[in-house]
Image (cartoon, rainbow, N blue to C red; front, side, top):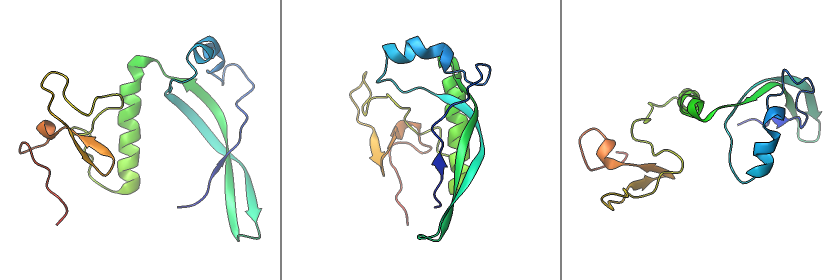
Length: 134
C-alpha cells in the first residue's frame, strides 16, 4: 500500500466548505463521529529521496457534512468502494452496523465476531453457523 498525505487546509470559500455551517454542532458534540463527503485533488507531490518514494499530498476541493438520513447511503457507497478495492464479494447483509450491540437486546443472543467484523448469524444464508476458510 502506498503513502498518501492529506493537506490540513479546508477550502476557504464558504460555498465549498460545508463544515462551517455546522460549527456549533461540532463544538457541542466533539466526541461524535460525522459522515462527510468530499472531493479531493492532488495538491502537490513530495519526492522523498532518502526513502526513494514519491508521496501525493491531496487537498480538499469541496466538503459537506451529511445529514443523518444520508449516512446509510454513504455507508453503502463506502462498503462498495472497499469491496472493489479488496476485490471480494460484499457481506453487507450480514455486517453489523456501527453502534449495534454485540448481542441481540431482545433475546440476549450473542453475535459472532470474525476478524474484527461482527456478524449476526441469523442474517447469513443457511442459518446459524459461519463456515471457515477451507
